[in-house]
Amino acid sequence: MLNIKQLSVTYADGTKALQDINLQLPAGMVGLLGPNGAGKSTLMRSLATLQQPDSGQISFDGLDVIAKPDSLRQQLGYLPQYFGVYPHMSCIALLRHMAVLKGIHNKTEQQQQIDRLLELTNLSSVAKKPVASFSGGMRQRFGIAQALLGDPKLLIMDEPTAGLDPAERERLHALLVSISQQKLILLSTHIVEDIENLCPYVALINQGRIVESGAVQSLIAPLQGRVWQTASAPDNTGKILSASYRYGLPVYRQLSERQPCADAVAVNATLQDRYFFELNQTARNTAGQNGKAVADAAA
Image (cartoon, rainbow, N blue to C red; front, side):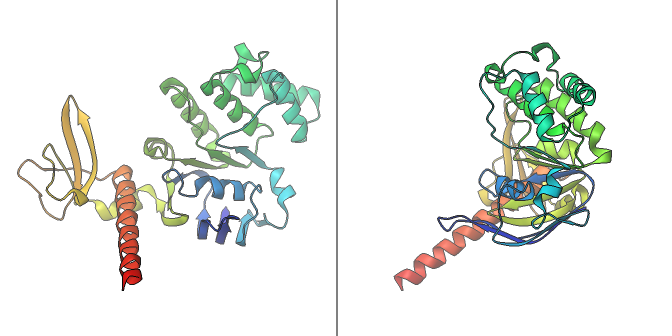
Protein backbone atom coordinates (compact mmCIF):
# COMPACT_ATOMS: atom_id res chain seq x y z
CA MET A 1 0.00 0.00 0.00
CA LEU A 2 1.26 3.46 -0.96
CA ASN A 3 -0.09 6.25 1.26
CA ILE A 4 0.22 9.92 0.35
CA LYS A 5 -1.00 12.60 2.77
CA GLN A 6 -1.21 16.35 2.22
CA LEU A 7 1.64 16.32 -0.30
CA SER A 8 2.53 19.73 -1.77
CA VAL A 9 5.31 20.91 -4.07
CA THR A 10 5.99 24.51 -5.05
CA TYR A 11 8.68 25.39 -7.59
CA ALA A 12 11.20 28.20 -7.16
CA ASP A 13 9.19 30.50 -9.45
CA GLY A 14 6.14 30.12 -7.19
CA THR A 15 4.29 27.58 -9.34
CA LYS A 16 2.20 25.25 -7.17
CA ALA A 17 2.93 21.95 -8.92
CA LEU A 18 1.11 19.80 -6.33
CA GLN A 19 -1.48 20.94 -3.81
CA ASP A 20 -2.54 18.79 -0.85
CA ILE A 21 -2.39 15.42 -2.62
CA ASN A 22 -4.09 12.63 -0.65
CA LEU A 23 -4.13 9.09 -2.03
CA GLN A 24 -4.21 5.50 -0.79
CA LEU A 25 -3.05 3.24 -3.59
CA PRO A 26 -3.51 -0.55 -3.39
CA ALA A 27 -1.25 -3.23 -4.85
CA GLY A 28 -1.71 -4.01 -8.52
CA MET A 29 -2.06 -1.63 -11.46
CA VAL A 30 -2.93 1.97 -10.59
CA GLY A 31 -3.44 4.64 -13.22
CA LEU A 32 -2.62 8.32 -12.79
CA LEU A 33 -4.52 10.13 -15.52
CA GLY A 34 -4.26 13.80 -16.38
CA PRO A 35 -3.43 16.26 -19.17
CA ASN A 36 0.07 17.52 -19.86
CA GLY A 37 1.11 19.94 -17.12
CA ALA A 38 -1.33 18.49 -14.58
CA GLY A 39 1.39 17.55 -12.08
CA LYS A 40 1.80 13.87 -12.96
CA SER A 41 5.57 13.97 -13.45
CA THR A 42 6.11 16.04 -10.30
CA LEU A 43 4.12 13.52 -8.28
CA MET A 44 6.07 10.66 -9.84
CA ARG A 45 9.41 12.30 -9.05
CA SER A 46 8.30 12.93 -5.48
CA LEU A 47 7.30 9.28 -5.03
CA ALA A 48 10.60 8.17 -6.61
CA THR A 49 12.51 10.31 -4.01
CA LEU A 50 13.85 12.66 -6.71
CA GLN A 51 11.73 15.68 -5.76
CA GLN A 52 11.68 16.95 -2.19
CA PRO A 53 8.13 18.03 -1.29
CA ASP A 54 7.41 21.20 0.67
CA SER A 55 5.12 19.34 3.01
CA GLY A 56 3.22 16.11 3.43
CA GLN A 57 3.92 12.43 3.98
CA ILE A 58 4.63 9.41 1.78
CA SER A 59 4.74 5.84 3.10
CA PHE A 60 5.10 2.51 1.30
CA ASP A 61 4.23 -0.65 3.21
CA GLY A 62 4.86 1.25 6.45
CA LEU A 63 8.18 2.78 5.33
CA ASP A 64 8.53 6.56 5.72
CA VAL A 65 9.72 7.40 2.21
CA ILE A 66 10.71 11.02 2.90
CA ALA A 67 12.71 10.11 6.02
CA LYS A 68 14.34 6.99 4.51
CA PRO A 69 14.60 7.47 0.73
CA ASP A 70 17.47 4.98 0.35
CA SER A 71 15.34 2.20 1.84
CA LEU A 72 12.66 2.80 -0.79
CA ARG A 73 15.18 2.91 -3.64
CA GLN A 74 16.16 -0.69 -2.86
CA GLN A 75 12.66 -1.82 -3.82
CA LEU A 76 11.85 0.79 -6.49
CA GLY A 77 11.83 0.66 -10.28
CA TYR A 78 11.43 4.00 -12.02
CA LEU A 79 10.90 4.96 -15.65
CA PRO A 80 10.90 8.75 -16.06
CA GLN A 81 9.22 10.41 -19.01
CA TYR A 82 12.61 11.53 -20.33
CA PHE A 83 15.93 9.89 -19.55
CA GLY A 84 19.49 10.12 -20.82
CA VAL A 85 22.03 7.39 -21.49
CA TYR A 86 25.81 7.12 -21.85
CA PRO A 87 26.10 7.64 -25.63
CA HIS A 88 28.69 4.98 -26.46
CA MET A 89 27.63 2.17 -24.11
CA SER A 90 25.73 -0.80 -25.46
CA CYS A 91 22.30 -1.79 -24.19
CA ILE A 92 23.63 -4.84 -22.35
CA ALA A 93 26.58 -2.93 -20.85
CA LEU A 94 24.23 -0.24 -19.53
CA LEU A 95 21.94 -2.84 -18.01
CA ARG A 96 24.93 -4.49 -16.28
CA HIS A 97 26.02 -1.09 -14.95
CA MET A 98 22.52 -0.35 -13.66
CA ALA A 99 22.25 -3.83 -12.13
CA VAL A 100 25.35 -3.09 -10.06
CA LEU A 101 23.88 0.26 -8.99
CA LYS A 102 20.78 -1.64 -7.83
CA GLY A 103 22.91 -4.01 -5.76
CA ILE A 104 22.87 -7.03 -8.07
CA HIS A 105 26.55 -8.04 -7.85
CA ASN A 106 26.32 -11.78 -8.47
CA LYS A 107 27.34 -12.20 -12.13
CA THR A 108 25.14 -15.24 -12.76
CA GLU A 109 22.03 -13.65 -11.24
CA GLN A 110 22.80 -10.40 -13.04
CA GLN A 111 23.04 -12.09 -16.44
CA GLN A 112 19.90 -14.18 -15.86
CA GLN A 113 17.88 -11.06 -15.05
CA ILE A 114 19.26 -9.12 -18.00
CA ASP A 115 18.64 -11.96 -20.47
CA ARG A 116 15.06 -12.32 -19.23
CA LEU A 117 14.39 -8.58 -19.46
CA LEU A 118 15.92 -8.29 -22.93
CA GLU A 119 13.57 -11.03 -24.06
CA LEU A 120 10.55 -9.45 -22.36
CA THR A 121 11.23 -6.08 -23.96
CA ASN A 122 12.15 -7.53 -27.38
CA LEU A 123 15.71 -6.13 -27.29
CA SER A 124 17.75 -9.34 -27.42
CA SER A 125 18.73 -8.85 -31.06
CA VAL A 126 20.10 -5.33 -30.42
CA ALA A 127 21.63 -5.93 -26.99
CA LYS A 128 25.15 -5.08 -28.18
CA LYS A 129 24.18 -1.87 -29.96
CA PRO A 130 24.56 1.58 -28.31
CA VAL A 131 21.30 2.75 -26.74
CA ALA A 132 22.00 6.20 -28.20
CA SER A 133 21.42 4.67 -31.65
CA PHE A 134 18.00 3.27 -30.72
CA SER A 135 14.73 4.59 -32.08
CA GLY A 136 12.33 6.28 -29.68
CA GLY A 137 10.35 3.09 -29.15
CA MET A 138 13.46 1.01 -28.57
CA ARG A 139 14.80 3.52 -26.04
CA GLN A 140 11.47 3.34 -24.22
CA ARG A 141 11.70 -0.45 -24.07
CA PHE A 142 15.23 -0.14 -22.71
CA GLY A 143 13.88 2.20 -20.02
CA ILE A 144 11.29 -0.39 -19.06
CA ALA A 145 13.96 -3.12 -18.87
CA GLN A 146 16.16 -1.07 -16.52
CA ALA A 147 13.16 -0.21 -14.33
CA LEU A 148 12.45 -3.92 -13.85
CA LEU A 149 15.99 -4.80 -12.73
CA GLY A 150 16.04 -6.18 -9.21
CA ASP A 151 12.37 -7.22 -9.31
CA PRO A 152 11.10 -4.06 -7.57
CA LYS A 153 7.99 -4.10 -5.34
CA LEU A 154 7.07 -0.56 -6.44
CA LEU A 155 7.21 0.29 -10.13
CA ILE A 156 6.69 3.93 -11.16
CA MET A 157 6.29 4.53 -14.89
CA ASP A 158 5.83 8.02 -16.34
CA GLU A 159 4.24 7.92 -19.82
CA PRO A 160 5.68 4.43 -20.57
CA THR A 161 3.89 4.01 -23.92
CA ALA A 162 5.28 7.25 -25.40
CA GLY A 163 6.97 6.46 -28.70
CA LEU A 164 5.72 2.86 -28.88
CA ASP A 165 3.94 1.57 -31.97
CA PRO A 166 0.65 -0.35 -31.49
CA ALA A 167 2.36 -3.77 -31.39
CA GLU A 168 4.88 -2.54 -28.81
CA ARG A 169 2.11 -1.01 -26.71
CA GLU A 170 0.25 -4.31 -26.62
CA ARG A 171 3.47 -6.13 -25.68
CA LEU A 172 4.04 -3.68 -22.83
CA HIS A 173 0.43 -4.06 -21.67
CA ALA A 174 0.80 -7.83 -21.57
CA LEU A 175 4.08 -7.53 -19.65
CA LEU A 176 2.61 -5.20 -17.04
CA VAL A 177 -0.43 -7.41 -16.53
CA SER A 178 1.79 -10.46 -16.07
CA ILE A 179 3.82 -8.86 -13.25
CA SER A 180 1.14 -6.72 -11.57
CA GLN A 181 0.01 -9.38 -9.09
CA GLN A 182 3.26 -9.13 -7.12
CA LYS A 183 3.80 -5.36 -7.30
CA LEU A 184 2.27 -1.94 -7.04
CA ILE A 185 2.61 -0.43 -10.50
CA LEU A 186 1.83 3.27 -10.82
CA LEU A 187 1.28 4.18 -14.46
CA SER A 188 1.10 7.84 -15.40
CA THR A 189 -0.33 8.85 -18.78
CA HIS A 190 -2.60 11.24 -20.64
CA ILE A 191 -3.77 8.35 -22.85
CA VAL A 192 -7.10 7.17 -21.46
CA GLU A 193 -7.00 3.88 -23.38
CA ASP A 194 -3.82 2.77 -21.58
CA ILE A 195 -5.48 3.26 -18.20
CA GLU A 196 -8.82 1.79 -19.23
CA ASN A 197 -7.18 -1.39 -20.56
CA LEU A 198 -4.86 -1.97 -17.61
CA CYS A 199 -5.84 -0.31 -14.34
CA PRO A 200 -8.67 -1.34 -12.01
CA TYR A 201 -7.90 1.73 -9.83
CA VAL A 202 -7.48 5.27 -11.18
CA ALA A 203 -6.63 8.73 -9.85
CA LEU A 204 -7.55 11.77 -11.95
CA ILE A 205 -5.19 14.74 -11.56
CA ASN A 206 -5.49 18.26 -12.94
CA GLN A 207 -3.82 21.55 -12.04
CA GLY A 208 -1.83 19.92 -9.27
CA ARG A 209 -4.82 18.47 -7.45
CA ILE A 210 -6.44 15.03 -7.30
CA VAL A 211 -9.88 15.50 -8.82
CA GLU A 212 -11.16 12.01 -8.00
CA SER A 213 -9.82 8.53 -7.32
CA GLY A 214 -11.26 5.06 -7.02
CA ALA A 215 -12.20 1.95 -8.97
CA VAL A 216 -12.89 2.65 -12.64
CA GLN A 217 -16.54 1.65 -12.39
CA SER A 218 -17.11 3.92 -9.39
CA LEU A 219 -15.67 6.87 -11.32
CA ILE A 220 -17.91 6.15 -14.29
CA ALA A 221 -21.08 5.52 -12.25
CA PRO A 222 -22.17 9.20 -11.81
CA LEU A 223 -22.35 9.59 -15.61
CA GLN A 224 -24.30 6.41 -16.36
CA GLY A 225 -27.65 7.21 -18.00
CA ARG A 226 -26.49 10.74 -18.86
CA VAL A 227 -24.21 10.14 -21.86
CA TRP A 228 -25.62 10.34 -25.37
CA GLN A 229 -24.12 9.80 -28.81
CA THR A 230 -25.28 11.76 -31.83
CA ALA A 231 -24.23 12.79 -35.31
CA SER A 232 -25.65 16.28 -34.77
CA ALA A 233 -23.55 19.02 -33.16
CA PRO A 234 -25.23 20.12 -29.90
CA ASP A 235 -26.40 23.73 -29.64
CA ASN A 236 -24.61 24.04 -26.30
CA THR A 237 -20.97 23.07 -26.93
CA GLY A 238 -20.37 23.07 -23.17
CA LYS A 239 -22.22 19.75 -23.03
CA ILE A 240 -19.90 18.03 -25.52
CA LEU A 241 -17.66 15.42 -23.89
CA SER A 242 -15.83 14.45 -27.07
CA ALA A 243 -16.07 14.63 -30.83
CA SER A 244 -14.59 12.33 -33.45
CA TYR A 245 -15.05 10.98 -36.95
CA ARG A 246 -16.18 7.43 -37.59
CA TYR A 247 -16.38 6.12 -41.16
CA GLY A 248 -16.15 9.72 -42.35
CA LEU A 249 -19.09 10.91 -40.24
CA PRO A 250 -18.99 13.11 -37.12
CA VAL A 251 -19.76 11.45 -33.79
CA TYR A 252 -20.45 13.53 -30.68
CA ARG A 253 -20.68 12.26 -27.12
CA GLN A 254 -22.50 14.66 -24.86
CA LEU A 255 -23.83 14.91 -21.34
CA SER A 256 -27.53 15.47 -20.79
CA GLU A 257 -30.17 14.49 -18.25
CA ARG A 258 -32.56 13.72 -21.10
CA GLN A 259 -32.39 12.95 -24.82
CA PRO A 260 -30.81 16.12 -26.26
CA CYS A 261 -32.02 15.68 -29.87
CA ALA A 262 -34.02 13.27 -32.00
CA ASP A 263 -31.06 11.23 -33.27
CA ALA A 264 -29.31 10.97 -29.89
CA VAL A 265 -28.77 7.41 -28.60
CA ALA A 266 -28.07 6.57 -24.96
CA VAL A 267 -24.65 4.88 -24.54
CA ASN A 268 -22.65 3.48 -21.65
CA ALA A 269 -20.36 5.97 -19.97
CA THR A 270 -16.62 5.34 -20.23
CA LEU A 271 -13.55 6.45 -18.34
CA GLN A 272 -12.79 8.80 -21.22
CA ASP A 273 -16.20 10.45 -20.73
CA ARG A 274 -15.43 11.01 -17.04
CA TYR A 275 -11.96 12.31 -17.85
CA PHE A 276 -13.24 14.87 -20.36
CA PHE A 277 -16.07 15.82 -18.00
CA GLU A 278 -13.56 16.67 -15.27
CA LEU A 279 -11.33 18.61 -17.68
CA ASN A 280 -14.34 20.64 -18.83
CA GLN A 281 -15.39 21.29 -15.24
CA THR A 282 -11.91 22.51 -14.31
CA ALA A 283 -11.76 24.75 -17.39
CA ARG A 284 -15.14 26.32 -16.55
CA ASN A 285 -14.16 26.85 -12.92
CA THR A 286 -10.87 28.46 -13.94
CA ALA A 287 -12.61 30.71 -16.45
CA GLY A 288 -15.11 31.75 -13.77
CA GLN A 289 -12.36 32.55 -11.28
CA ASN A 290 -10.41 34.53 -13.87
CA GLY A 291 -13.53 36.47 -14.84
CA LYS A 292 -14.22 37.29 -11.18
CA ALA A 293 -10.62 38.44 -10.70
CA VAL A 294 -10.87 40.75 -13.72
CA ALA A 295 -14.18 42.16 -12.48
CA ASP A 296 -12.75 42.73 -8.99
CA ALA A 297 -9.71 44.49 -10.43
CA ALA A 298 -11.87 46.75 -12.56
CA ALA A 299 -14.20 47.65 -9.67
